Image (cartoon, rainbow, N blue to C red; front, side, top):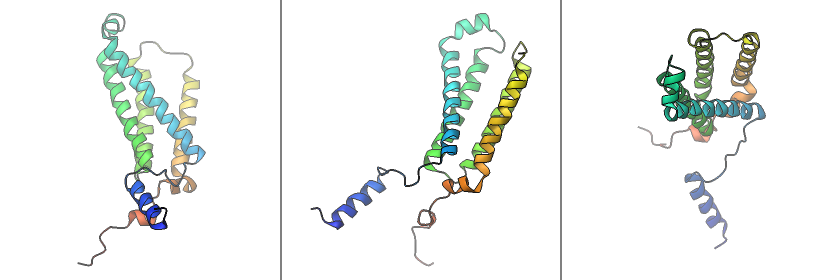
Length: 167
């Protein structure tokens, strides 16, 4: 049963089941960006779980904005991160736009939270601002450079319609 036809059938079955590895390994810069999304998703999942498990302590010692704000914002950004990671895994065509939008929205939320919600102003804000700009610049550069853009483009045979009949 080691005929080329049987091997081709087995490979086609595994491909249809999604069991074969992807042909294209992500470039190093995209891998770094995926790790950034993964780390922020984990951080916000921790915020969500903390708001659920330590609700009484947060109500007692941090009454404003409260555990609901921490949990809701953590849940929103966890869900956003999961969707982005899923889009990266699928190499979805529109993931770059979602990635750029989410990174800009996260940076805006982070600074709005820091300026309007957090009680005390920290002295290291210039460093945080520079780091935010550096990370956003990196993400936007990776998302917009043509050599990384090709990673998200699907192969021609994947884009073609399965139906070849002429109406």
